[in-house]
Length: 322
Image 1: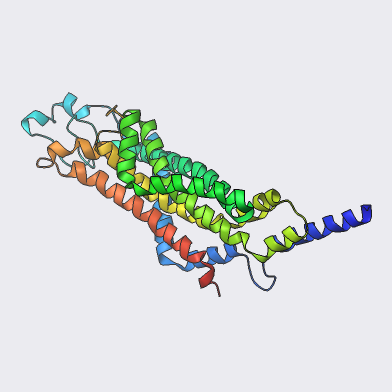
Image 2 (image 1 turned 90 degrees about the vertical axis):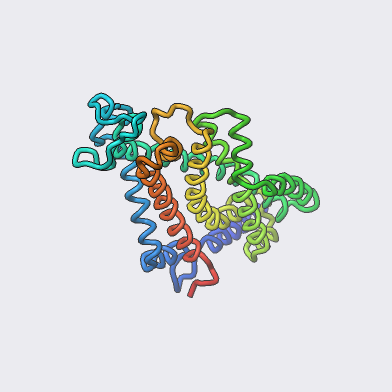
């Protein structure tokens, strides 16, 4: 009996090794994907944009020339918004002043950190909750039998109801219920992305559940829970990682939209690109640059995430592997 058990364990270990091993004649999926990304101009442009954005967001606030809340323009008497006097760019103030006499360039740099924080945290919320729901549904549907399919059906009906609502409308509804704050924006944008991650991971896991290595492991008596956790889930994460990159772009835009609608951080002294865009609306005729600067920053940052995400999706597509 001991010898038989030992052989069975050796077979299971061997199976796990073969399931994780890539073709010896080639390279792994991630290595080949990285090679493709290095040859993709869109991926390079997206990566450069993101590296610059992260550097500005993380390091930039320590080197801003003026405090983001310092009303130097009003103190110096050069800004009189009530009289339509808001000076533009100059040698000392590259982006000029805002309506409260604050240096716009400094506020843009500090606002990048808030924008990055909202985008990353909201994406992580959606990824964590969506992966949990999608992982349970995918394991139940692919390996759970009749009762598993019932669990999968119940979870997916909830996800379908969330998908039935427009994403921005759902985010606005959540933000209105929770009250205006930076945390509210993160939660609202994160909840909106939950259905996407859930359905994507579920579909990928169901596809993996029909693979030969799962059938072989099942025939050897490996527990289905172990198969799901150690093999099916890791092999299903590639499309989810790509989607997380694309969701970051959407999260930044939706967070800016909520802030623009007045559902973001009520403290307007804290720079955030969406809030800056909203504050600039009454002064478009006087200083259109107050709206152009944050709008362009949002567009370029979202473009960087989108370019890199699409390039990653193409690089990881098994149909394009040679």
